[in-house]
Image (cartoon, rainbow, N blue to C red; front, side, top):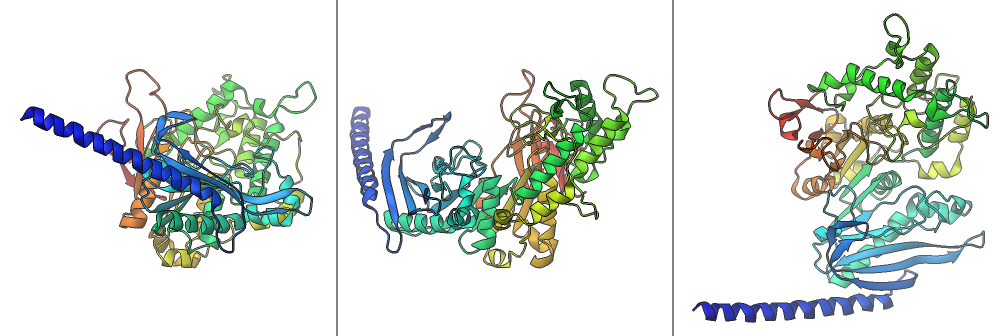
Length: 522
């Protein structure tokens, strides 16, 4: 009997393997046929299609991808007014086993590059492609020498494509291809991105409210021109107390010594860390944080190497307060005093000069305001001013924001301000909570990173469950990336609570575990 059963198992395994091989062969043939793809009313060129067997992600070998077809093409290829070639390049991953979901993977910086359509961001270690999503990415209408190449802005159409048009064009084309390839339409559509991708996610909800069922906007570049003014302002203030280098210019990141930077972080922890019930280097009760740099000023018993001169304390206070024009107008949001602002890993924290190193010792804020107010391309790109999302919300759309409190590029408080402003045109704050949530991540830099932060979390699952099951994400569990700080310690985890609530220690249980925390109102 056992031998019969064993023989039957061998036979069944053989036929299953044969069927799988035949299915794979058919999928590969169908993928190859996409090279001859034509869509009515759409100019497609430079089409290529490659069948990619199941295997690991090249840049992350521990993460596996399923077998899929990767289609690449260009929409609306043309020669610009400057004589340069333009067109909306896109890459579409079509998995062998599709779950009916479509995810648009946002870009970064000024785009100009075509990233692999995987959908890795905000999905923990399970990319959207691995979950059965079809995923698309785009260069947004131009190719650049690097992600910060802005030469395309001299072309009107390329600027429009980058600002928002490529989202609509790629979405329509990708959905049409998926419907034809799988003989069924897309069931659910999502947009996920951070930084520029976060700004694009906002554009998707604002300009194309019927195209997506859910979007995730991380650290959105919602008004880059003012953000640049804001980070320049920080650096200019620090430059007032910074030493001069050999070229006579201030060395911004040395405005405070390493000892003084650590003293600032300790000052923030002393003022704010325990407000969430536990001292762990992470400030979750953001609204209750009140730190005044002047408490670190030298004098009396405070004369150690970490004390600040009066000028340094004033510079720090002014820097984080944000730029203010001569008439009292706040040009950009303040930056939060958070425990990651002195970090040096990845994108350095604001106390280390940030991204925008300013060689000037003074700045004409009013001149900067005039430039920001009248910068043409920024008018198209900025998403901060548009808060009426009634169409998106009324048809069931869901929108999640997230932002690192130590972000040195875009202030998390600017995203908080936008989220609050959603209330007036959308039925009030309680109504907004029914379709949009904001999650703040203490200690996290731009889109991720930070020496203490819990920056590993799965917002994609939270969004899908909200859209498709109606389960609103009151909290999302986040953990610290990498190994524990000390051998033998558990990996730190915390709940990220939907703003304005915050994670507070319940008073019992393991302080390293998210299960020991609860979401409280400020």
